[in-house]
Figure 1: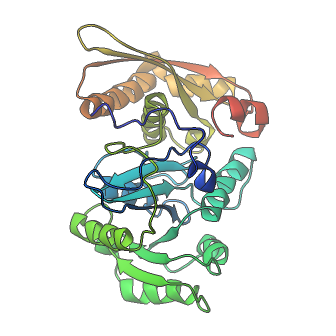
Figure 2 (figure 1 turned 90 degrees about the vertical axis):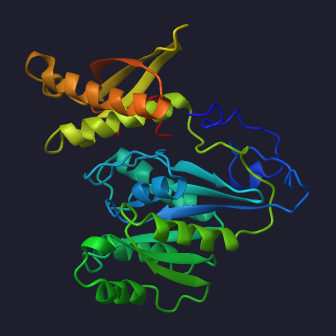
Figure 3 (figure 1 turned 180 degrees about the horizontal axis):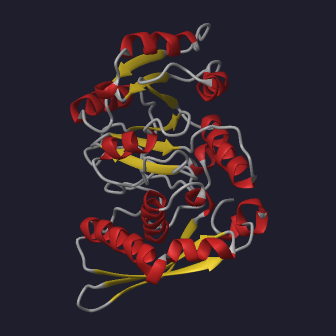
Length: 331
């Protein structure tokens, strides 16, 4: 990991920050060679579990967003940044748009609506294995009339039996749209050349703008936010039934020893006392497995030895508690 993977503190008085988000820093409008620069924000939207985060990570050739087979792994808008000599795409990975059942779900849907209101282009990711469902139609209604370039991205091509037929049905949901619309079918997980080709098409559509982030930054997250999402990803993979959706994570402390060891201390938050024992498991086995899997990911990415200490705590009903949601970073 390079030191610039995580960006510096935002420039609060940036003239470009106001146009997209007060936390987005702005940098010079020309390249080091004096050429004009092009940059823009691109929202990645779709229903849960269609591969939005996998596509983002594939665009960047590194992992900035958590992924798991479970729907609704992504809970907040994560920005991933791809920069060339004169171009910069700020991808905004959004939670899956769905019918919210609690305050957390409402927050997640708000993240989608907020992203759509202030981007330069949209990627609508759909699952080619299936025809459109109610949640796909919900997404289509949100984006159909937006006056912004849109790419309909048919994902999971490699495991789809009837991709052309499925794509036709998704295309029909955009009928009447007048703004620029493109299409592509690919596998975000297994077709890097197709992903790179789509990225080139997006680069060509960027407006003239200064860069919003420094060269080398790949995400807008702090290292603590990123690590907490890695921990939650592994928890979601290991835990069964509905428990993964009642789990949150946070990193409270990160220190580096002189020998390079990264000491990370975090928490896994559950809603009920009964859930605590389920996360810990018999003899602490479940918690150890979550920690070992997360530590392995962290060590691979950081290229450093990691000590990961995890504690399970209870915040009763946190998914319905606005104060708890704010405390856990869902605000």
